[in-house]
Length: 376
Image (cartoon, rainbow, N blue to C red):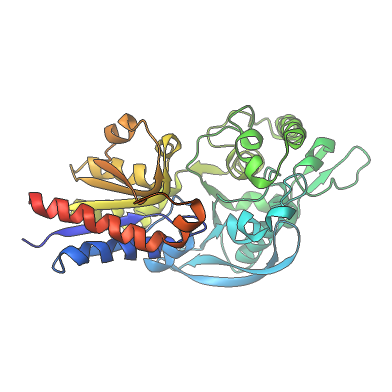
């Protein structure tokens, strides 16, 4: 009996893109049975990789524009202009991504989302009336103020001068001036994390260290964001400190929610609806999903668990594959992941695992499919 496997996976960061991961899984399955139908669906939670998902599913086309990275250095970046509506999908990591900044130069006290704002400005100039901002993988902690500056907004200190770019500069903020024309744009932020802006699980303390922040920097950044939140409340009446997901991308979600009335929505759900993911799951026999790491944090909106939850509605078995897995896994199983497998097949360091990830994924998928075929 010919089986149909749907492969819905995210990237293995700093190793393989989602497309390469899906291809490796399909190769592993076909090593065991060439007659198995594999439908590859590289996916994203709405952050990095979302543009490729949209292009692969013919939702829109890419537009290239000149902008700046999080340190203000000139770069080219892309966004997606939708085919059938005046809207654009901007991926924050395209201009303001951590991967664009050398490790020794990462510093969220000074990095800015200004370059992302330049892309948004270009999309609006091209006719976009709705902006969907996919956030994730940012190098910043400026609460999205760089974006608004690029669009004509002003963030001034007590002397009426612009505060410095970056997260630390928000500590001297005294006045916020927003351009009226931004209010006519419909703003959506595709966000799948639940972290608030402030606190031990907030933007600074959760994500700051990976962006280059020291312990002292974290205190400065947290204080600056708390001050920013007070000014936003004073200016707009919006309380942003504990907005669910507000801490995403260095507080960008909270900043745009508070200042531009942006709607915070699930990036996975949005992409799923645009690509018909649920119908594809409904029509398959097995689902394979994958990501670089599956652990306790994965239950908060990451692709493997989100896919499993959707598949559970149709009682589809879901196999999860990851570079590393960390239990306990009771919650993962309860949410629909039938079983989880690490690709490691012996002692090796992280660099070796990354170098061999395609081979290891393929080998793991073939061993899993051999077992499944034996039990059919």
